[in-house]
Length: 396
Image 1 (cartoon, one colour):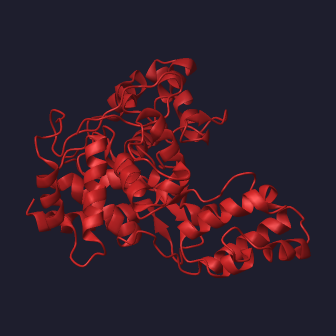
Image 2: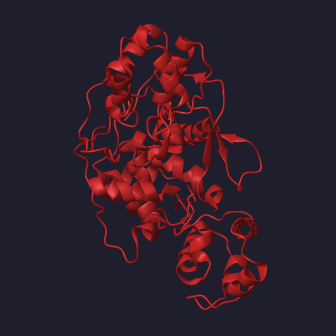
Image 3: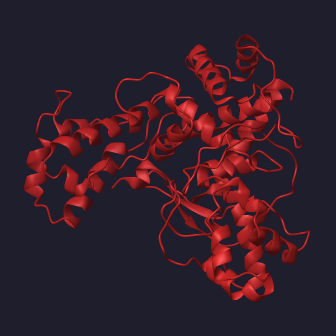
């Protein structure tokens, strides 16, 4: 329930858009949950070439640079500066205009720098979703109506809280209470809070839970890690991590912005899908998901064979690889090492030197919040425009 409001659910669309290569970001750990043993993780530098370690710039100098890059007139500049510097320091991300501007561009796009962004018509959306779930589980309307009149832990009735909803943070707290306290809460919400992301950078709760297993969260916090994601400090920390703390061989930052929306390595994997589609003559979704997953964040496969896999299996003779060998390599599609696998190398050898290694994932974003058709490419281009404006402020 409310997954559309809790996160933008991507659905693949057709034709791809190719991009020309140019430079990007530095080295630190990557937080993808491992299949068996954790793979060591890293993040690349603002320009192509050798990965850079964090430059010898003090927090004070970094703070001065960041202060020049923050847009004029945003609320609590000092707080934003402190949270971003803190995140970069703990995540070992270099203080550079490119990195700072990447985070600022995403935060501006996702929330306009509001620490708790307002979602238009949120109360109406939530009532609609509650009604859909009530009908799905055949719960009588009078049972739901009576339960919603019950006093909640904050002193208001659940109905009053739904009527007053304005932000995902409020909605997250509401659903935590409803799942725990209402007689039908665990049934209609399937034993879990349906709000999947939040905070000013709209960070995935699942990513945060995965990341802390590989890279301990540095701050003390009251409540749950889920609650921390809805704070500015937590959202900036995990948002910076998912955007920058992994090695991506992209020519332009815009592909990281696409990955931020579609999942790490989606831009690289969509280019791989395009190469497979052209070699096999099959129409494939260029969405960056080569395999099918029951839990993508933890790389748990569904057991079904994707269309891209079927196309590859049909090419096994040309590729000189068995089904097991291909599956072995495909299991790395969410990791940096996929580009070094035999399967990846053979596909691009057949595709030729002109085949792009990065394209915009072709995904339509689905959410009750949206009143028009939006895509991952739309998101990435919007963020990139803000990124370029930020770099102009730095003279970079």
